[in-house]
Image: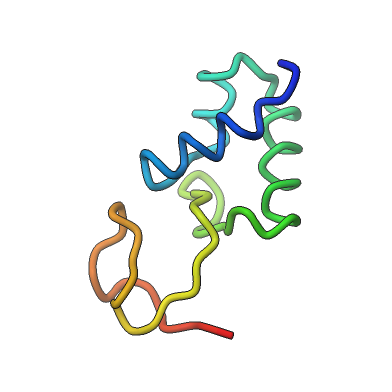
Length: 85
């Protein structure tokens, strides 16, 4: 694994709106297991959230959404539920 891909993965997510495990594997030349571990760690740290299941799973920046006031650029309006703490 590269020294610390975490900052560049988070930068990629901020720039592109989301990331998949496959993209992590391809862009950082990691194994499937390394990519899964990295994304799981970022989710557990509260830096990313998981959306979807199986092949359609995406990770995107952790944010709290209030009725379409804030939304990821890759998600159509109305497709995410209102949720905040």
